[in-house]
Image: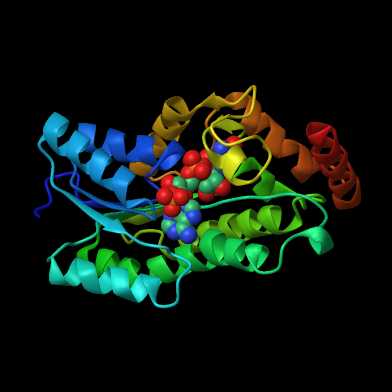
Length: 264
Ligand SMILES: NC(=O)c1ccc[n+]([C@@H]2O[C@H](COP(=O)([O-])OP(=O)(O)OC[C@H]3O[C@@H](n4cnc5c(N)ncnc54)[C@H](OP(=O)(O)O)[C@@H]3O)[C@@H](O)[C@H]2O)c1
């Protein structure tokens, strides 16, 4: 595998939704890719599509990122293939709702692992080399829910708040190094996210969600531009101001009401 000008992107969670569209956009820009998700058949399909359409090189690595040693294994695989990661897209994630004490044991711990710990571990694995080269991009796909506590989705909102905070701090630490970190905060997007979370039946998506390709394009452009925080739509950007202006207790109550209403 060789990098072209735009470089090689490692994108997690590319078997559907926003991640798949980010991978397509990067390939359309002529960039090579490393594709990571669990569903090997979808990775192989996407790799074949991108290689045929854009002549880029694609390495598909089917992997459960929550497995012990997953990130070390991934880094080892890339090293053995001589792959340099120029752009890291931490997109894989899942959500889920309901009262915290009624949720299945282990699921929320896996959520924290995938949504928060894995981006830290992948940053640890690939940032030092970016920094040494004086060039690199990190895109962390957080969420609009990162801006407030989320009664009824407590762990999901907390995991995204972690990712937002981590991204902002890292972005500041890396200022002037040529490496940028972007926290991308989408609003409701039509993907498999809501069926994976159990909000809708398998094969269905939630009504009113934004188009995944449009959302991905906003995140991808913000990453290339090196923006610190980015939103896909102005309505989502405006919504992010509310929790920053109102008292925390009121915001928490408002989010709890919105989450309860969405489920009824
Ligand atoms: N959709 C929304 O409304 C929305 C809004 C704000 C933020 N987001 C965020 O956007 C990101 C992408 O979500 P999406 O909406 O595109 O949902 P999606 O269609 O369900 O995609 C999630 C991706 O993550 C991968 N994934 C899940 N568990 C994994 C694991 N253990 N190891 C490796 N990969 C795993 C999935 O692939 P496999 O199942 O094949 O592993 C899939 O490719 C997430 O971080 C999500 O929190 C979504």
